[in-house]
Image (tube, rainbow, N blue to C red; front, top):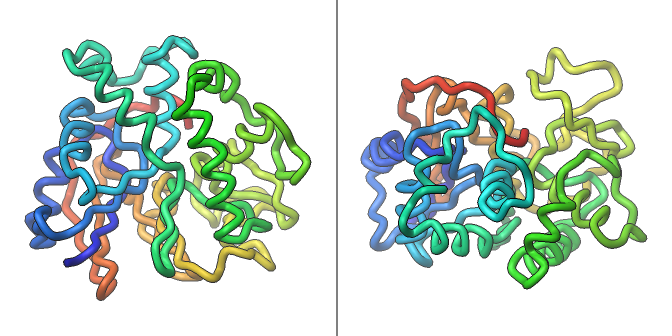
Length: 275
């Protein structure tokens, strides 16, 4: 049995099928780990959700920012943006089942010396701390107050973690870090607006994984989200968003031997949703 970790799909199912063929993956015995953002910007959002859901325990998918956007739109917690591509999910006959399945996905998955999260982790968080914080979000999202939670999720404040944060502010920081983080200051303040390459970052900002003293170095962090970073395998990080949605590639890594597989994607999308 092998484990394949796969970058952001964003509603692109055909490249996934081609990628699995290239990997030689057998979903009856192998496990597929998805870095989040299963939906939005692509044309096959509903079928992508159906495919991953049908994998059962052979599929592990953490939540990304576009997955949260779908949840917020579907329950009426936030207004719909003009450029998303979610009509096929929102009008699907099995819409409710798909939304229920999605809101029960984890925010973070930890197995052996790997930690799977969509975007990143704040430097002061150990892996056990981060997993415990992810569970706080999962408990609310999977519970009776999930719509109220989503109504209060959007925004960029607070920009840094404090252990004494409470309520929606606490949960918002956790989600923003795990689903939106790319760059932060040396003392861990999130800079959520910057989306470009490392070389062009404003002075004083670092990739989250280069902050001195980062406490999550005990595990290899598997993530996506940052298409301008591209494939990155260094400093205890495997980043796999290689821009499939922008006409780049869809990439997978087989964890057992770190072999890299990719297929070209042709569809280029327009910005949409919650970045």
